[in-house]
Length: 383
Image 1: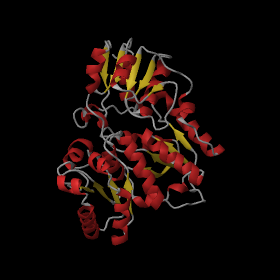
Image 2 (image 1 turned 90 degrees about the horizontal axis):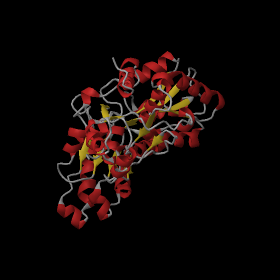
Image 3 (image 1 turned 180 degrees about the vertical axis):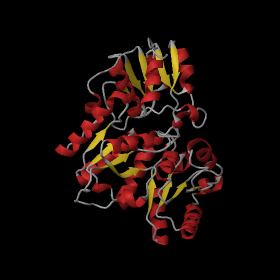
Image 4 (image 1 turned 30 degrees about the horizontal axis):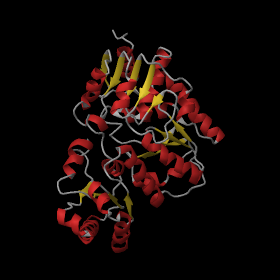
């Protein structure tokens, strides 16, 4: 199987639009992996994402002064809002002190700098979550007063989960129809200044697993409740009610409460990012109760619900697919579905899995027509 996007690329994706400078500490040429496979915005939107071009001698001799000098030189020329440094396997194995490097860069440039302890061995969602938490520590301003209108924050949005299918625009439209104002979106289509005002919102809406650790951080620091769920299909009224309840009671609605106690069935399955897969499966079960469950090879990062099985290895996934009649998954999983003797597969591409290969086929589950078509294919009722 192909690997999912790595945590260091998750850092770059999470911070891409915020006016900072991201440095991935890795070997020369490895930036092409990020730009070619992990970042659909690269050709349309500039961002300062660099590779340290670590050489073999730098790694063997521990020549950290070169990367420090290079970052300082670039930062002085570009004057970014911040500097973020992310690690990869070689710096991890040689014990590079990324936090120490960030402190030295900040002391020499007076630009806020921080390190994200990535190693390319974990999924992108882990890197996104870590990057946003580090950023929030430096820039989010505590604000006891709530926004006059019903302001919400969207937490966990990057093109790795919300690619070119218009899902984020659909989510914004759903919020507008419900009478909510988007106070800040972490972190697509928004500026660092808006994110700094995150504490002014009444509710944080977690839209992917990578946004949950950040929501929990804001709940601890500012007392802002969160709702963990997406308004997929028939779940839209439930989503609206959950946001209203959270705001009124100042209490969070985790995924288990939003999705309910339904464990789904084994006839059909949806495989993908944990929250999106779980919400899709739950919405399918509104159409045909007890028919669908959610599976994910990605870590849950706290997204827990009876309907969801996450952090699955290939062997576990193959075993769990036994007896499944229809699987909605990225086409790269077709080989495992065939080995598990799944009756039929439905294309459900995921940018973080297959990159640009199936980008044109990404399903916007937040719009009724494509969602209904997906349900029809899963339940074999498509006309």
